[in-house]
Length: 425
Image (cartoon, rainbow, N blue to C red; front, side, top):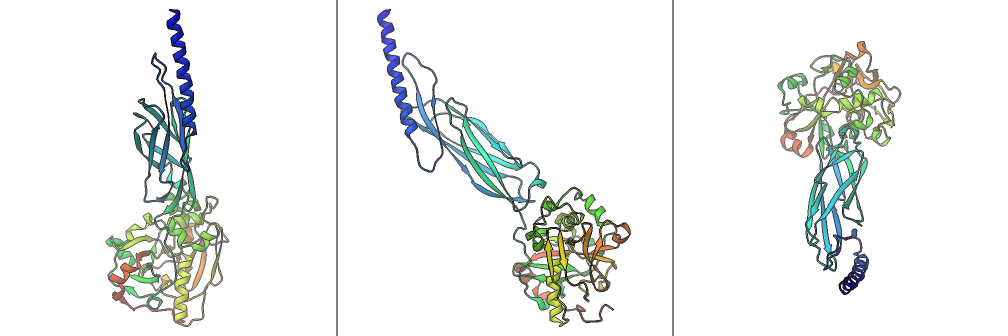
């Protein structure tokens, strides 16, 4: 018995020395630019002695991505875990666990599992989904930190980061440099809303503004809202929203306000809620025809000024309107002009007391810009029942310019009264 006991002790010491050598070899391994987890699996000793040493690598795709509000529902994530054997063959399964840190996204999929052996790779497909899309602010970046770990002893955690940029499907929308200005005000023959009742409300559509990518049409008729804008935006779910919730249409058609920092969660003014509601395409989709990419409740003040100034110049009226913006809204330097295309007094439909523009004035949180006939750029209180039941809209629809040129360019008909002095007297 003494002889046998002595032999076992010598064998165990020898194996222990070999294990130390194996660990030293594995810990000395490394490939530049790759993250590894190095650890030892110790499954116990038998009379023969068994151990295995290895490390694993984790690759995460993508490292950055865009989440498009209103279009995307999730972002696909792939994690490739590669095991690399050490000096001995490892035949034991490797258990892994994937956790994350994010206040705006949740990680869904197989976040725990196992890999059968050190010679096996595993590709894991996961989904990042927003916890509340309304909390995602256009133009901001969210950092998602993934942690990949093994439940085995001595495992070293791998940390990877994914940068998610929040965008809108209309992120590239712009007012841009005007083209075809001599045709502004012409009737666009052939464009119609998909909804026949909406088309009857609109009357016809006129070319309002155009750049090399986007063409904007305005309804010929003014359309009564028959309620306060405050009541309307509250009913549509905008009552508790902020400037951060205004989509890419509202932001990019109000670029000065965007640059001034007006579209943030700190802006809780009534008129930024109204701007969000009026530029929310889901609220005005009935005016959208098959070729339009969206419809909204009216032109922004910048879209209006760009169009008006070109038409006024064309007719030598000597009138130019300029605007500037602060984080709380716009300031305009002129308030008088004469125009049928902007003035509901000369539309063919319901006469509207105030034709709204989809932009907030700087000087009052409860005011919205509008056109007050016969010839004023005006600010009016959107919470006042008596005044605002006279509000009306001239919807704007947007068509990609190449589509417009192909289908409607040749149909334009010049039957517009124009900006001639005395026209609105």
